[in-house]
Image 1 (cartoon, helix red, strand yellow):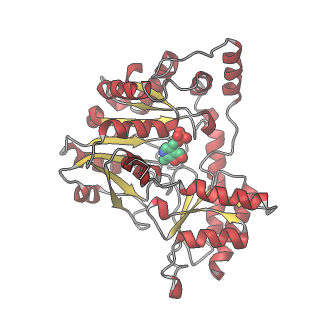
Image 2 (tube, rainbow, N blue to C red):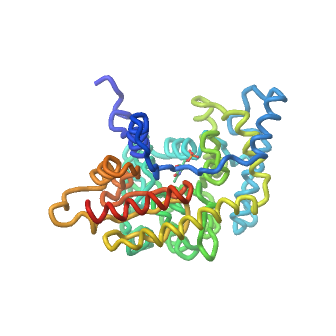
Amino acid sequence: MIFSKRVSGLQESATLKINAIANQLKLEGKTIINLTAGEPDFPAFDEAKKAVIEALEKNLSKYTPTPGVPELRELVAKKTNLQQPSLGAKPWKPSDVMVTNGGKQALFDVILTLIDQGDEVLIPAPFWLSYPEMVKVAEGVSVYIPSTFESHYKINSTDLKKSITPQTKMLIINSPCNPTGATYSKSELQDLGKVLESFPKIWIVSDEIYDRIDYTSEGWISFLEACPQLRDRTITVNGMSKSGAMTGWRVGWSVSPESVTSKLNALQGHSTSGICSLSQAAAIATLKLPPERFEVQRKEYLNRRNLALELLRKSAKIRVDEPHGAFYFFIDLSGVFVGNKTEQDANDFVQALLKDEQVAVVSGVDFGAPKCIRISFATDLKTLLSGCQKIVDYCEKF
Ligand SMILES: Cc1ncc(COP(=O)(O)O)c(C=O)c1O
């Protein structure tokens, strides 16, 4: 075996796999309706672009401090404190912030820093497909907590309690959730928090990357705002990819107790160092924008969600819950896999849909939901509605 045990079990991302097939078909001259995107279809804000140009002109081309430039760390601490006012006398300081190459690196570094061989990491399912792969690299064990269409793809305190063992070291919570759009309310988070109070060895990682893309009537809530008593063992992860429409600029961060941040700093210092100086300038400019500037995108996603949902619900064969955050529909195809098709899973459906109808969607297999598919509505309305209509029609004949 030439590869380390650490990487030999790693899976290629399902999203990237289907994208590669869609691109190949495009090269062959086919017109593909691509509903796989895990990224906003908006451009970055003009202020962000201008900040990069200014940074270039000022020759900001040197290494930056490993955990990020002071102004950015300060803005991230400020944003997080605004979202977690219940922390009161123990707000976050800039020194608690670690700026990373996207939220992905923040999650990866946190898992590597806190998980040892055999440690169990609780992951509510369906889940973002990178979590288990990151846990694998850390030689930990992913323990999935199943949720259902009926529970709106959310876990409750009983589900959580049942999954905890003496080996449990971490819970990853992701609200709004990729792939389901499930978004936890304050009381739902508080119920989970009450259980966690009795298990002081469990770290909580709250992945809040979709914080601004929220359609709930009560408004999105940060985990620590609901459970401030868990401050000293919670790591909040966020970034500019989704809310700032800056996926390619790679700006994310973690906010954690200072003892954890200093280890993250050591790890990043020997791996990637501080992130791109120009991207940090863009993030500073974006974080300074008033909240209403982000509303334009949110309202557009909401409009698309409502119109596409109406269309998808015309099919009696599929079940789709209303997503309360992020920009995905998670569609249950169990009603399609009936009769002699019960052996089939979403991978079969996704490949057939792409081949027969030239519509690309992501299979739920790697998200821990083999009978589901994920559709992104981060695409223009015309493409979205035409793709959804084709999916509804295809489900009738599959
Ligand atoms: C749930 C979730 N967390 C984290 C990330 C990482 O985002 P990025 O590394 O682009 O900041 C993504 C990206 O798709 C995501 O969907």
